[in-house]
Image: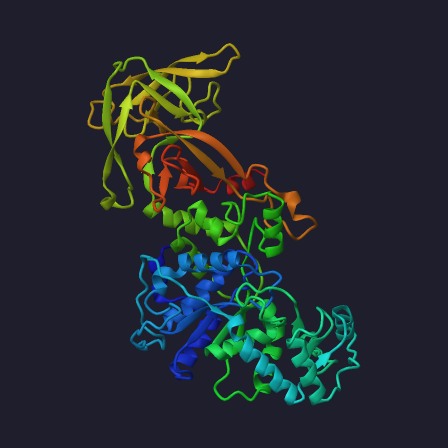
Length: 589
């Protein structure tokens, strides 16, 4: 699975709708949007929506807007706006830069192919593109005028019920005593609300629809509320703010959105979306809302409230902690955007809620990293090996492959000497059957080097192993007389004299069960082993490691430099293991 696999175009019910509209020339162009609320960091569920909305625009030669649906000043922050821009930029930059930026790029219109879909090539290499978001708050003046229009039409009224009373009345299908105010009185009160005359919660603007509607969202829903709060984008200019449902559909209309693609929980909101638009007698084609099932991923939580709780209670180090399902955390962990993009496309778009096995994401990451990661030698839990028959002071430079999946990656030199480090997990004094690594009297092959045999185990006074003394078959290196001897085990190593230390953070799943938030306190299922920090011994070429590169520590997993890394102290994050160790544990159970 790689990014180019998606160039043939995924198929789902939303794309079938868009394809039909595209073939019929229903709209001058296809126009979608991704409209997050800036009240938290984006997570992998948003990645699915980003790839869907920007992807459809790309496939059909259209445009996708990034819009901040910033209608709640008490929960929104510039920090979240900045993080959203960075995340979207990172995920869609390469395939967005031709025709998906927030500015028109002058792309040639799509040519319809024989299957009724536009024929575009999707670049496999992502580059950086700057995204400049739209803001719902930029439309506050226009939204206010739309609200006034509804009042003049007798389709909205100012209500004096408290928020608690409003909820109770709507629940019980009860009419507000203020529902039949005159148009003039409603216009006066709404203007005074805007002027800041009333305190928070004193009055609200509601739609006049049907207090007994079967769909509770149609029971005279709120359109505006009073909030004497500073807004991150408009400052103190406004003291009344539109509700999400009112601002969302009208922002879509103002921007010329054709397909407003939302997650399934907004399906019950669609009648209100349509009611607001049709009640205003707007002159040009109206946007339409379509819903799909949101992404629920195993072994994590997606609720912004719960993610914020993890951050505030310092269970994780921040929103970008590599154990978090946030896009910033996934990026910091070392996952390439192409892997996330391929995952989002391959899980499909449906109308049915369900939990996606996290192994599907992990597979996409492994497949992507296997082709791009540079191979390097590193020992996470070192134990010293002394080759007693190898000359003291001698150093050889052995050839090692940078990436067997990519011949163009070339070769590198790695130093070999009398004293080495191997991983403690690769030696057992009393091994079980079929243990094909090093044991007393046993032989293994050192990757790229010699076959060695363990002759003696050195221990300290407490009985802990401190050193292994071995002999090397000096004719067993590639090209030697005994190089083809059949040895079942091959292990990795690092020359002790040339090894460099690095902090390695071994990240694992944050929770121990697939659905931690379905029964009681989700924190009871936190994985106590979700992070282990070790000091590794690494081959010297890693001193030139770069933050944009990905590495496979051979036999161990895929790793990336962390933002905490410094030239004098390298810090690597484990992105993912080479194999699904959780699946093995599940089989044991």
